[in-house]
Amino acid sequence: MNRRSLFVHTRMRNKEELQIGLIRWDSYPPDMRAHRVSKYLTNQGHDVHFLCENDGTQPDREVINGVTVERVKSKNDSVLRKAFFHATLMDYHWYKKIKHSITHSSFDLLHVIELNPLRTVILANKNKLPIVADLRELYPESMVAHKKSMRFHQRLLRPIWRYKRLERNVLSQVDGLIVESSVAKSHYVENFDIDPERVVVSRNVPDLQLLREIAEDVNPPDYPEEFIVTYVGNFTTQRDLATLLRAVDLLREDGLSLRLLMVGDGADRERLEGLTDELGISDCVEFTGWVSYERMFDYLAASDVGISLCQKGNKDSECAIPNKLFQYMFMHVPPIVGDFPAMREVIEDTDSGLVVPCENPEELAKAIRKLHTDRDLLEELGKNGHRAVVEEYNFANEGRSLLDIYQKVL
Image (cartoon, rainbow, N blue to C red; front, side):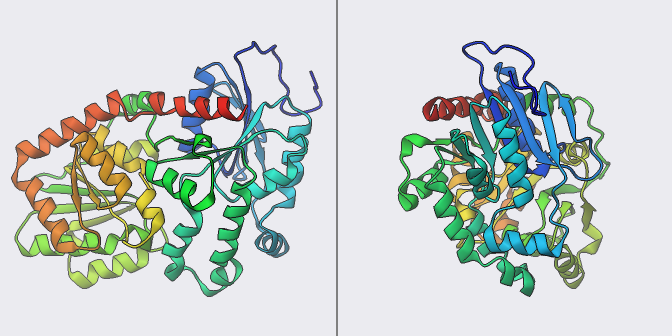
């Protein structure tokens, strides 16, 4: 066994065990996706080595719950480095690190999360290990949705056509693909000429054990006599949060006593706060800013309804199943979602919430009013959603698809 690598393997592997190189350009913790993947794989007896970014405060190497975590101080903080990445869509610093790790390890395969690292990984993969791409969003299509909020220099440095070309190029070279919905699978199979046997669906569902542990210790804020509507997540134009604010304005005009919790932050926050002031609803809208994962569940414990919307006409929105949907459901909070195929499929399958037309504040207000008025329906949908997460929509079930695609590429 080669001991030159930081990825030193200190025990003999049995015939069933795989050594997996997990790569994502994000910091861990708190990356919940990497947490779910690595926890499931280690629980199944596999050896996971996670190569990720260092946020500047974390150790370069440590073992977390059986996962060897190697961190790279690789933030694109220099103008030259940024320019090189935007011109080539590969990061030379990461290239050297990945190449070294692959050369001095016993990896059976590489599991790469998100589109951006893929070209660098492919170029660094001199050992020709199988590569599984884990794409939880249609990145170029998401860029289309965010284009209006991008600054001029961002649009100049990150032209969408270049990322579409990157997507098509790297997906022709990977051995397997993980996506989060059957709608996304159809998109890639039909538009990228990918063998459907090499694509698996692993929905963006939570770690059930972690949710149970957090739920035992929630401390919800007190909002007496108010109906609580909550949005959790990033504030971007793609999330269509302006429609949510306008629906709240309509409900207030009808005399409904409610509070909107905006749990999160993002590039669109300033515009949304301005719209809140313009509509005159600041007294019933609370912007919490980013909160810890555990604190988010305190707010959900106080909530009556959860919101997950998107702008219409975007392919990424059609394919997405956000993790917040299942967090709402686990906490007995019925979701109201935009009418997109992937989210609608979950809601109809579980009978856990309501589906409304996109970018339609009147219909959204009507749905909120319906759940406010019919408390029996509110309770029934909440119970259905919780049961669905406990019995099916959790990573203990969805994780099996990872092993399925590993088996196929090996």
